[in-house]
Length: 161
Ligand code: FES
Ligand code: FES
Image (cartoon, rainbow, N blue to C red; front, side, top):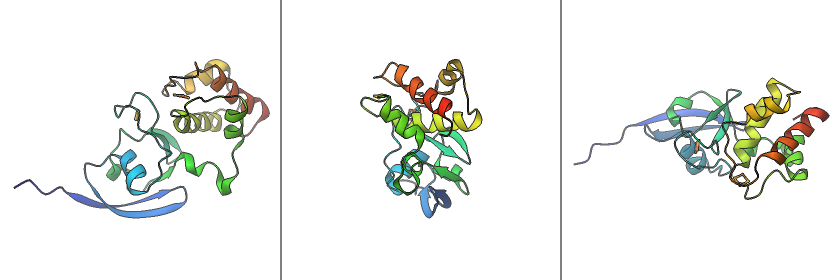
């Protein structure tokens, strides 16, 4: 007989909504966000902490949600890409990504936006080097990063992420 999988009830606030849910102790946070809460804007690229596609904000800081168990987020406040555009209005950063053609396939974009938003919150006027350092945990296979850096720079120069 297989061992029963242990479950635990967690309470997590995601994009302003509280989810109280029983989860398997082994479930990764990214799978909780995508499969249980159904917020599929958070992507899975590598499942090993390398690509940054799964980046979300947890208690205001960027984390790679494939590197945490859902039960480790018990009591936390999380923002996913769906939580950026409050009331459906895109943020200046999202608009800048669109205007600067800072995406091609878009797979990296949710994680990239959250890393960029965090960077601009910490440092509203980063240098190009600081921007590149701020997104170094997010891999983009399409753009070559130039337009992503341009988009972030344009928001830094105009103010407000
Ligand atoms: S899926 Fe989490 S870092 Fe790649
Ligand atoms: S736009 Fe395709 S991976 Fe970044």
